[in-house]
Length: 282
Ligand SMILES: [Zn+2]
Ligand SMILES: [Zn+2]
Image (cartoon, rainbow, N blue to C red; front, side):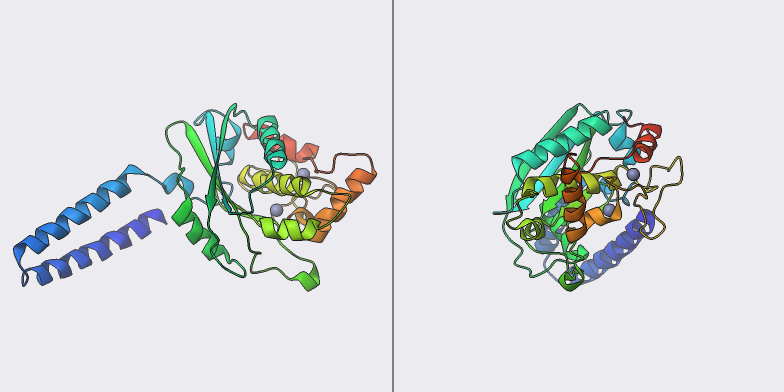
């Protein structure tokens, strides 16, 4: 895929250059020199950052996130729309989860505030475009970089009448979106669950997918993938249950946990942990 697209780009570039050469042969020479200097500068700037390792499919970096073999540092770049910064408590819970399940000990989290894209809803393509504009951290040496965007608009696919509002999604090997506005609407004035709990549950669930669960880059040792919900777990109460990415059903699950005296935020079951351990995790 990458090779084909690079080839296409090269062909487009060659055609563009030929057109330019023909054009410039009719124009004064100094214009041509000016142009070639510009394109040299651009290609140098692009050559500095190699983004290819961060543009792979979800789960492709599972083993690299879990073990320290190739990368021993993890850099989490959090971008958020002004007013939609995640709670400190949720990020602390998320970091605990990372330390519990991966061998990464050097974990850095950075924050960058963004202006609103002024959209009613967001398509996945729009989220990918926003990442291209705003992401600054890519894999570098032994540092593995992950990008998380906290959005001020809901997913375009949300259907409130069906109660299927999406709280988060992953769309590449190191990219995640959290629909922060949706989380805050959902929690509202709830007395049994906090915004921080839902943020943390969503972050942990989505990161579980980046860690390759279920059977998404981290092979399932014993079959426990939900046949009705791809990449999700069949075990009741597991963090990787499909209902965790949707609003109401997540609240129900968290409420049932607290009523049983358990922590509100669901944890991975034994099967999911076994898979992670078999792929280099803890
Ligand atoms: Zn999921
Ligand atoms: Zn599970």
